[in-house]
Every structure is written in structure tokens, then in C-alpha cells.
Length: 140
View 1 (cartoon, rainbow, N blue to C red):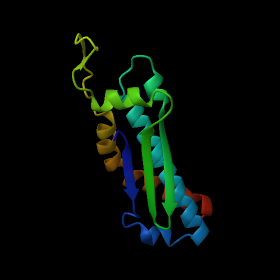
View 2 (view 1 turned 90 degrees about the vertical axis):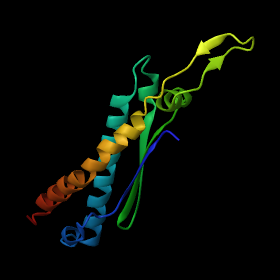
View 3 (view 1 turned 90 degrees about the horizontal axis):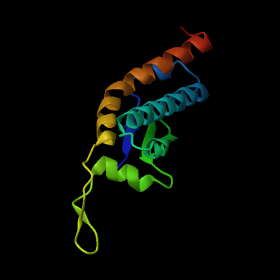
View 4 (view 1 turned 30 degrees about the horizontal axis):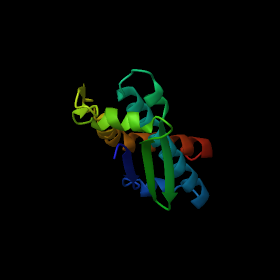
């Protein structure tokens, strides 16, 4: 499937989250998850090949948070979802009904490349969100 799933735990930041109230920690964690989703969507869109732009516009992200675990999903959607999947994963050799070849789509793997870059950035994104929340709360 052409998508990026990032499961985030607190990366050893539990001691920093303890500085907040329960509500403040939850807000900071959700904000970090949304930023991770936004960054992942940007990376996937940047890697998508540009032919008509329809494929890039259909890359979306969603976030689900429960306690100290957050799941961010970056995925293709919309009426041109199939084009995005073809561009990401490629197709085999295609042909018409009469056997005339029509070519193939080379796999680009832009979701996989976005995932690799995003994995290295997740902890930094959460660090910056926690620092912002601590400054806003007057705790740093």
C-alpha cells in the first residue's frame, strides 16, 4: 500500500511531559503528531513526480492519538488516488485488448523515501513542540 505510517511513543521525553498538567501534555503531544503528519505530507508531495499535479493534491494525512501513543498516516486519496499509487509502486507491462503494448510506469517509491526522512526528524519535531509549550506555559 502506498502510505506512510508513523507510530510515535514519547521517545524518552516522559520526564519533560511530566512538567505539564495532563491536559497540557495531551495538547503538546497532539500538536507534535499533527506537525509530524504535516511534515510527512510535505515530504511525500515533494517526492511525487509532477505530470499534472493531480497526484500531489491528493496526498493527505491523519492523526490518531491515545494516551502516549500517536499514529500518523500519510496516504493518497481523492479521485486520482490510483494514479498516485501507480506512480509510487509502478505497474507491470501493460497492453491493449488486441495485444499492442502501451508501456509501464516505473516505481518511484516516494512514500518510502518520505518515511525514511521522517523517521529521522520525528524526535526533533517533538522536542521543538515541547519547548514551545514549556515557553508558553512559563515553565522554561
